[in-house]
View 1 (tube, rainbow, N blue to C red):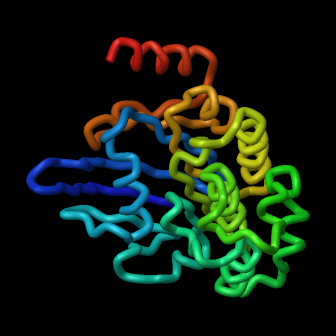
View 2 (view 1 turned 45 degrees about the horizontal axis):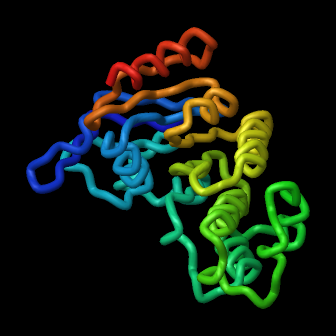
Length: 230
């Protein structure tokens, strides 16, 4: 389980996060939605201990992330392209990630397992990550997320820059991870992608949780109306 309690973060006096409580249980698929500047990425970076909160804490598997590094072995994340090592080729980078996770699975086996989501540029032994399209970079990042045996997968705007076919394949991939018992936390501006891949949605605005709902036809319709009204 991931717990976020009393989490506050400000930048230059402007409050970015004020989360009273979020609890994410094992095996859930959670969509985090909100307008630009709502605090989604700040929340994700706080969960990853990349930002130190002004107050409050995050727990993973019952341990505060600020007091232990044990959680790092069970949570994989991809926030953006800066997570990648651009002077490596895609397969070199994925091999590096697999080694850091002490995985018994090799890069070719990883790619074969997710062949539908990969593409030829990832297999290309000549291209460096820096020379790939943004969409392909995102694919590399998501594939690296699957390395090892993580219990928790965290993705910030993974649908961005993916073509419609790749978005559909990513939705399928997210559902499959949940079926395999993994916890998936994903942010997106696209409510349809969230509705088709997650079973719970947390709406954040101005750093606060506005609603925390199960995905149903009526709840997603109301959520869509909320953004129209905004």
